[in-house]
Length: 82
View 1 (tube, helix red, strand yellow):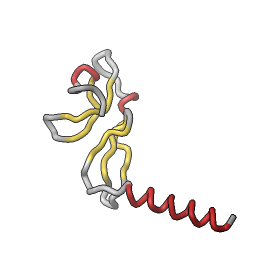
View 2: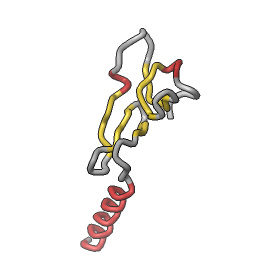
View 3: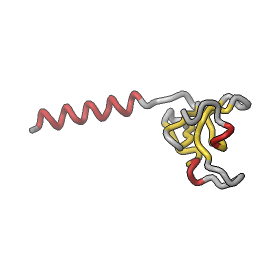
């Protein structure tokens, strides 16, 4: 049992280490736009499902004007959500 706990702890640490990022980077994770904080961890920037505007659903996708992943109206996303 102890061996399994050590293995699970190691896997959890590896998963956290693999999710590091460069500060100010952005990404889409489902309908969530995330930004990399100064401590190299992903933080919620905006939940696109909660954005209201234009009478249409919003989703997270690449914004060519800013060069970032961001919440945009579905019809403005090139190829849909990433």
